[in-house]
Image (cartoon, rainbow, N blue to C red; front, side):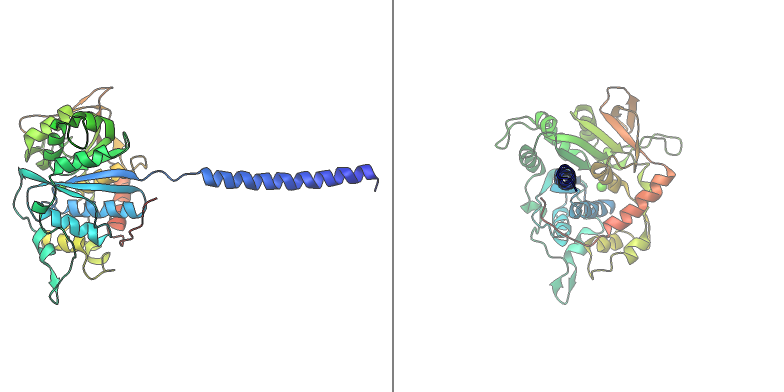
Length: 356
Ligand SMILES: [Ca+2]
């Protein structure tokens, strides 16, 4: 081979080697630059102890957190009963996250025990508590608005999604709060700065039996609900009463999917709430799902508009192109997907991992 051909051949082989090497480098760079999305920062505001969907919804949040899809910053409670907070602490402890802060309402509504808080808290086997927890009473927990201000003030701007699935007591009071040791901002300013979305289970956005329907979460603290919808400074997406009954959580899941552990606080609570077997509408779970996976096509959304609450406790939606409020809509194929997802995730075994 002539010397000039040898040089060309060597040059060709070398350039092939270089291009393979640089392709590998590019691939590695691409892998290194593909970042998983940040977990959604969630505050869960609940009337835990009234209906059972609150307990399932908290289990759902923990399943999402185990998948690094969300980070539960705090739970605040609007049911004014001292056993609600220990019950929440039981669920958080069961899922390996005993230190999630819990705040409680003072002088709130629905003080009765309900059907499942105390049976789960008091459950024992061979003289030992079935469900360990260290918060013994809501009276030992911080007041909810103070905790909300503390948690919000420490978060990045426009990063927090609040999921409210009970009454509007805590959030209406947060709106009216003044600056404090955590932040000089007023409540409204703090929400505008830190909160990205309120995903709320409240209201009803169609007639039921030919009439507007005053929904439970709204009418139990009507004044707070009116103030919330009137003054909340950022986006609201509401899951109306009509959504939950279309997606019933099945008794067969409670009976079969939680057997990986002898004592499961959510399944236990479900069995105490009503006489088994029963299926239950998944109202509160839908607001959690939208908060964590808003863009996965589980729901459709109404056009933008404005939600107001009248004196009868009925929600009125007025379309407005610049409106900050929308409500969830669900079709038959979405219902099948969501129902399967809820049973799979709510019964997912605990798997607490440290967040990145
Ligand atoms: Ca609820």
